[in-house]
Structures are given as C-alpha cells and as structure tokens.
Image (cartoon, rainbow, N blue to C red):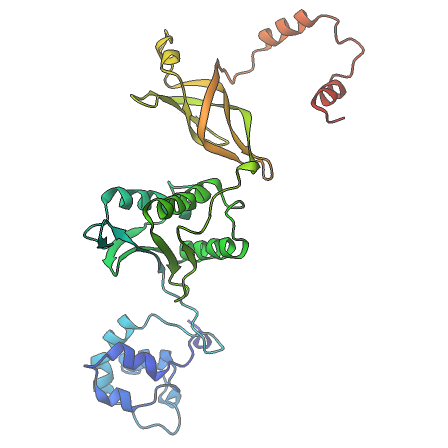
Length: 346
C-alpha cells in the first residue's frame, strides 16, 4: 500500500487510545512526525524497512514498549490521514436521537413511564423517516432508550444518518414538510400530533452535530398543506396476494411500478366473489390522494372502485373482434390526433 496514503499520527490519538492506564512513556514522546506505516514496521521488527525512515532528531523508539501497546493502539484508533493531514476514515455507523420531554400525569416523563404504545409509534415512524421507499433492503437500525426524560437513540449506517440530517436541515430551512416523501412527511406529522395531544417536546439530533437539528413542540405546525392534495383515480396492475381483515378489510396488490399496495374494500364485495381471487393478476381502479405540485401518490387510504380480470398476454383474436365492432367509424380519422384532442393535449 503506498506510503503517501498514510500521514502523521498525532499524539492526542495515542493518549486517547492508551487511556489513563497507558504507559506514560508514550505520552512523553512526540509521535506527530512518525508515519503510521513506520509504527507497523517496528511491530514487525523492521523486516524489510530501512531504519533510515526513522524521523530525524528524535530519540530511539522503545521497541519493547511499542510492541506491548501496539495491538491495543491499532484496535482503538480507526483513523487514517489524507495528504492534508485530515481524517478520511469516518466511523461506519452514526446515531439519531429523539429526545422527548413532558409529563405522564403528574410525573416527569422517563423510560419507566413512557408507554409502549408511544414507543411503537416512534419505532414505526423512524423507519418511515429513514427509508420512505425501500424497507426491504435497508441497513440495520438498532434502538436503545435512556433516561434524561426519554432519550430514544437509533444507531444505523453513517450514510443513512447523513441523509436524514439533510432532510432535517431542509425542514428547518423551509419550515414545511410539503416537499418531503409522503411516508417521511406522514411520520413527521405523527410526531407533531403526539406533541399536541400529549404536550410533549421532541428534539431530534444526529451524530453529525451537537446541536438540535429539529424541535417539534405543541406550538409548531409541521403538517402537510391539505390544499396540495386532491382526490384522483388511478389504475394499477399486479398480483393480488391477500384479501380480508376483520375491522378494516383490504386487498394487497403487488405491482411493479408502485410496490405492494393496500387497498380498502367493502366486506360485501369480498363476500360476493364466487371464485378464489388470490394469486391472480388483476387490474384495479382505485381512488386516492395525489399531490398537485409533484404528482406524487399517497399510498395510504386507497379505496377500490373496480377490480378487473387482467391477462398480460397479447390476444390477437380478441383485438380483431374489437376492431370489427368498430367497423368504419374511424375511417379517415387520425386516431392519434383524435385521442390527443380528447385528452386536451392538442
């Protein structure tokens, strides 16, 4: 590995690694001018490494002491340095903290009286905020709850933390959640709703900064602008993999373009199905909400209007039958232009 990629290692990292029980000899020595590759070479008893690489004007290394402490040193110091003497290897994981203050009855909020229902809502919400589109292929997110009111700490990949920090910065800058992914916006709304209902204060921060990134209180108003969401009809095609439900019956349709959709249906509709509808391809006509600014679909609250048998294979005979029914009605008409006129695109 090229020596140029390893730059000088400051003594402060060694003191941090050795700790209070570290050998005082190392705290007296100045390792700032000592290339990291040279320390490794000393551990290997200088095999194949000329001793002329030792920094000038420095006292000889105490090799025995270095060999004693080097494994601990390497284990604790996960830092490399670039050509400007700056760290280029960051920790592989980071943290997101949601700090909640408030009261449960007359008692200050703490992990001992923070209800499991609120914990569940928070866990569901953090997954929606971090991974609005793809939850199947996400990195691991671990969770711990600590005192200090209630400190909910989530540890996950550094890339996820950095991305979420950018989302929080955007919310603060715009004081709005209208431009977020629907799933992320809905999770923020859930926190805002909890703040208003329970008189809680939520402080969200990341390991990217010691400062609070976003504060949600009963007085803030992080809700989506309802004027941007209008009723619309949509058509989807896919495989129906589940149907039913005791209180809120629905069907699950697996589509290529929108993933798995949960679509509300009426119980009577499912009762009237004579044949088994599971694991068959269907087209569905549904009603839902669409953002007029972005065209985005809100996948929650979809309601079934019509279920249509769907066969993706091309049936030439069926097409010929339809054409024969039309007859000469479209003779001399540019069908493409006519369709564009109907759509108002002409």
